[in-house]
Length: 347
Image (tube, rainbow, N blue to C red; front, side, top):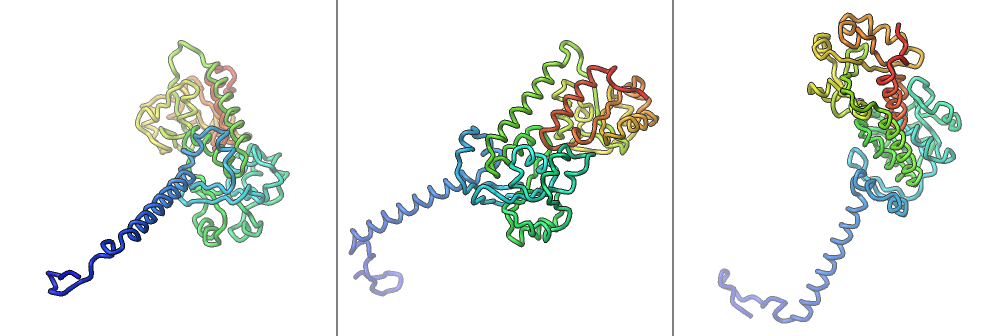
């Protein structure tokens, strides 16, 4: 016993003084448990790494990763995939197109209603294999008894809330602003559905298509000054897929050059001041010529170098505003029309 000076009382000696062996054994056990917990947390953090980090791994390593697989979505929610999904529901056209390219149709139970719209869809024919559509709300989606649901950050907030409240297996895609995002989304979807090899093959095919486009770009000529400009007055600047498309074909996006980021409406005065050599826009397949004529009737457009030379390129929506590998077709058409002016019909 020793005297407690502050309280004026006697207190017992510390346990480690009277039972040193038991104390140090307990200490060693505590250290061991701590090490195990740290290792487990490290292991889980590796599995929960961002999709960009996970998809940077070699395809062989991704493909060999067993189920259950873990991956965070665009909202930061951690999705645990217990097994290779067998009842997949897609709520976006982008995931429709990817699933019908790298997935097994027998594992897809429903697609978005946009998949049947020829204005935007690249897979209207393939989609006929799948009977289910997700044009309604969460209740209808849940009736398909899905074990994987693909949505996007632009999906209706109410729908996402209801699906999450039902503890449905939801993965939310959220990056669509660059060609790199498209490749990432292909690999991510392939990882989730257990089709890593097919996803990588699709990415490689896309990269080969883009390489062929670059090979046919004229050398030793000044880059064309272009910009996107639609009937609604919007243009696309930096950090857009359009800007990446322009860079792929060796041109200069004037809007990005003037500090535009994302998509923004500009005035006729800005259009005249920037004076593009070529104006690029998109339209439904049946409205390409009509859209070109309407733009040329715009006094501001007609005054630009593009208007005077009738260099208005109109690309079909389905290969221009797509967020999948089909954008390579849009880039190929853009390059062809930029460097083969006589291919473009004039009004």
